[in-house]
Image (tube, rainbow, N blue to C red; front, side, top):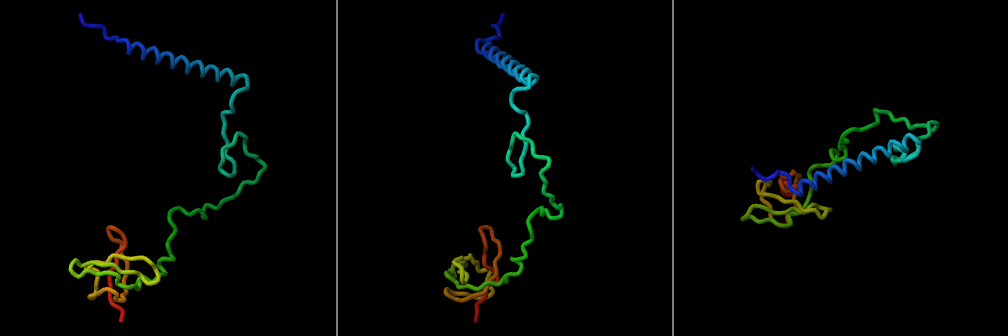
Length: 151
């Protein structure tokens, strides 16, 4: 015959499980008894006008603020300010490598530099040339495109 399938650790786990179940049942009966007597913790939580949890119910005489459903904006508001800006920016070529075909343009009035690739040029540019350009989202950030010299 084979060895018994019940090991010491298995018996201990079953005892522990039965003990926890019994304790849970005892706590449930205690709560039930306290609720019948009218004591024990308040089972309700209320939210006041500021969004905080409270154990007291709100005052029914207090006037509630009326909110018009049409005033609620769902989603991102339209960016009318950005549309009004001129997409053509001015700047100076800070660095340009003819061999590798890329460089950087520093925007006028701002300390921001933008990457420019030779494919984004409308005419040849060199370092310190004043240029106009537009911005386009690239894989690593904003890139300067439609770059041409200022006369």
